[in-house]
Image (cartoon, rainbow, N blue to C red; front, side):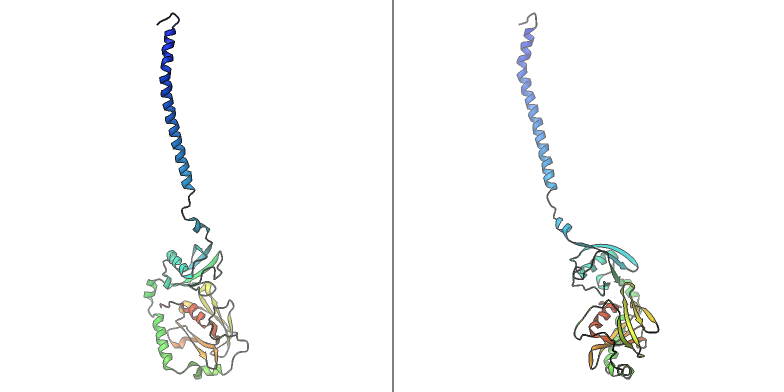
Length: 287
């Protein structure tokens, strides 16, 4: 009922208030639900970001930074110290395009493929020298080293032992040099860090061999001069134990296409013979 002061209108508004309150409560519930869902999504995202993706083990592995030098070009490489020499060759292949079988990798001598970088004691910043030619370079060579080596070997089989030949006897008959390096028979060692010295050349003079791996050169030094010979130009290396002194060898470096270019060195310690051949010719010897 209408009153003079409008009390009826007040009563009607009051009766409508419960419906408004219920509607407002429903809206509030929806807002709360939305906020809760949003919070759950944030929590799920945070939780997912804390889950390891499996790369943690790789991040924790000890790495070493190397300088790879091939064909006068330097490459930076980071690799686990647990990697073997063979694995390093694969990584070098990915950097340079040089197949592993064509690589001669050197670090204080020829790098062994079956040992890890940790075993070889390679440290950060180490320089790794790589020598080798691509397939195209190999095919372009006119006289393959392999053919030359086979011809030389065939000729050797036809001859008497080298140490009995007159041209070598005049040097060997002088006897073992007093200052020659100690030899060990039946043992294979890597090249020493110092030059091989105290040996004789064909004229009976003293000669020393220095392997400059970073320059890919063999330095043949005498009292008069030092010849700096690129290892890639050496066609073959032959050797034979000296009769009566099998812990020492006589060795020839073939500097040209024929035997006439052989440079003979006498009283080479036997434990270094294989290392010398591997360093000069490499294990692959494609040309």
